Image (cartoon, rainbow, N blue to C red):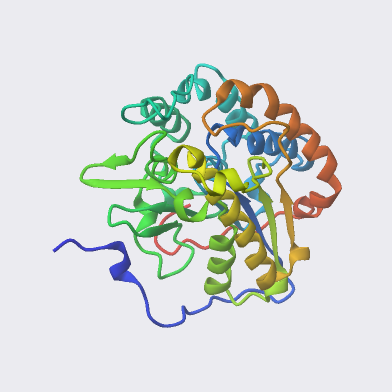
Length: 332
């Protein structure tokens, strides 16, 4: 009988580890959005250049959370990859551009819309043979496993988290970014995973709930910098509401937007909305998550202007470095 990941679920409150009452717990959370990850990559590049005093971004956060493309970025930062390097990979036509070539018409496509091999190569080149337990900060990353269950990959920052630290970072990054329809599932041996964005495109609640369950932190001490991949107004018109399959080809966009609104609202109720800084600017046009040319043309500059607009609002995240986190089963 196959053992499911959910078979390890505990049915009691997790033992909380000590946390100083006067110490903040800072979280960086990055949404999914395909090649529109150029936007958060651009914002992170500006943050690194202007606010990090020559240190990696991981020096300033107690936890990273990322979904899909945001998961790749979060794990890349946890591997101490410079944000500028990640940005350059995303915007390179021979790297990020090869993942999403000219989109197929989904009404005519046979199989996935894109070949996943360029993504596999890009992620493995970025992360190499690093293990998840080598992360410079705690990391929480969602995926959907082959049993059709939501999964949360977690570094070994709690004694209950015994299994993920020995996985390759690249495998986890590819699991969370395995977008069905666009790229297809990530197959490792007999295991299959698909994109965590199916249930948690904005991973802020995954991070906030994990922090609260693992540490005795006053909830008002949790601070979150949440970065999205840009938003479009998604009104449901009478024509669309009454339409069939072809009117709802952008269902994933609706689902992602609704989940994100809900996640930000719930996290705000738990820790106070004033403790969340959300960077998710309005897009001037409806950019699809696999449109490299439009993303590369539009989003780098939007990232710069978004950073400039919110620079003073996020400066406090970078005033003090965090302490190294405790590994329960791995070596830093």
